[in-house]
Length: 326
Image 1 (cartoon, rainbow, N blue to C red):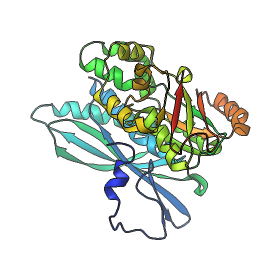
Image 2 (tube, rainbow, N blue to C red; image 1 turned 30 degrees about the vertical axis):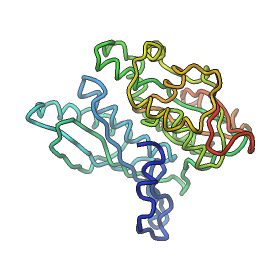
Image 3 (cartoon, rainbow, N blue to C red; image 1 turned 180 degrees about the horizontal axis):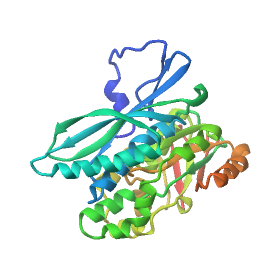
Image 4 (cartoon, one colour; image 1 turned 90 degrees about the vertical axis):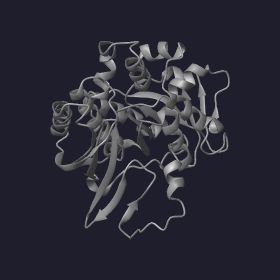
């Protein structure tokens, strides 16, 4: 499904809302007011991305928590969502998955309250997460403004590497750099975004272009991205040039192509920008006037950030357009 498909799916449904419903379907997480607090809720799960069940559980946990961090929130509790066939896999495998999950939840200071398991031929693991908006403030994808700068906090290309790993073209050892990033919580960068960003989302299955498009169309702006400024795994770029990439990358690119201006940009670059990411970083916009203070805060917290583009002035391109060069 593309970035806007879920919204189209529920369009016309008589969904119940009450005055406490602050954000519904279509953003990284829902937001609901309870007394003086604002709760954030999300759910996500993935199939195995590596051969090690412990790492899969840990990566899936980081991935699930990211939607809360993308709203500038703090995760509080989680419920496990498990698809598993004990006839094909040992229960010990699932225990390792849960051990990886447990270690990351402890790092995130998030309580596992329970969960649900179903029999499933294809293993799946993830979390439904509830968090809180600190100070009653949260971020959405709809706050980007003309002149804002566009930043991202992790490299792209994990989908390409996972595809190559599953096909035996690379080993898990070739993914050490990517694994270290996939295991990195977005908590610190989320706190930076909460303080300085105007709009924010996490880079996951729709690829960098798909998530940038989400910000652009919801904010009523157009966005410029410089490919050469985007952090990417060197091996993933080589693999894409050899036409090794997941089907999802092509589907993501096809979804945004009518909203894309990329004259003279090599197709392999657009494919990599569309690569479905697992446990990616945060993509956010920030006023240029706040950039210096934001970067100082990032340095204090040892958070790496890459400036990859900007929000364009109104009228330069149609709303929702993504302009790519490099």
